[in-house]
Amino acid sequence: MLRFNDNAVNISPMNQNLVFLKSFLDISEETFTKLSNISKFRKLDTGAIIGQPNEVPTKIYMLISGVMRAYLGSETGKEHNKNFFMPFSFVGAFTGLIEKKPSKLVYEALTNCKVYEIDFQSFMDLCENDIHVSNLYNRVLEHVFIKYEERQLELISMNATERYLNLTKKIPKIEKLIPQYQIASYLSITPVQLSRIRKKIKTDKEYES
Image 1 (cartoon, rainbow, N blue to C red):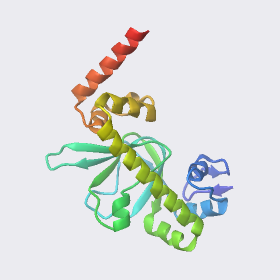
Image 2: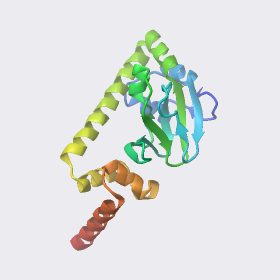
Image 3: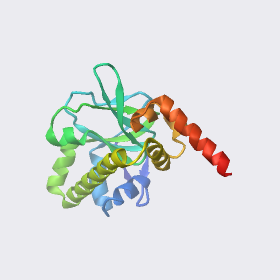
């Protein structure tokens, strides 16, 4: 049985963490062990921030429990949500990590979360010495790019109602997990507009039934 560092979670071939990584690439338990050796298990309280804005990021995270967000803060104090993260997903300022430049994004736990923290440089060192880890990294980057493009197309091609319905498919029961103003920010609308959208959807469903 394998173990991640500093935690008591037993790892078997069917463990969810391994299954998640296998969704990108069919990695072996040997490769999984190498990754576990550079990982650190962490619990994040609601409101916890990983990394600091305008600092060069050095860590990537695998979210296994809870909900997180990435947002951009303005000088006026307004926050613009860029993304929501649900288990299982990778969380981190990839552009800042790759370019070794400060990130403007802030990553916050919207609920109590559990993550595995991985030092990015240690991960890149593994990529240099293990083709399987390198291939996994390439697949993860492909996944991140695809999700980014989907998000951009969504903003361009969908109206607010369609974006909201699409989000509820991705995150079932989102209303119970994320505050309304956070959802509205992600959809690039106001909380009042979101309330109207929800009301109309509810009315339409009642009419259809």
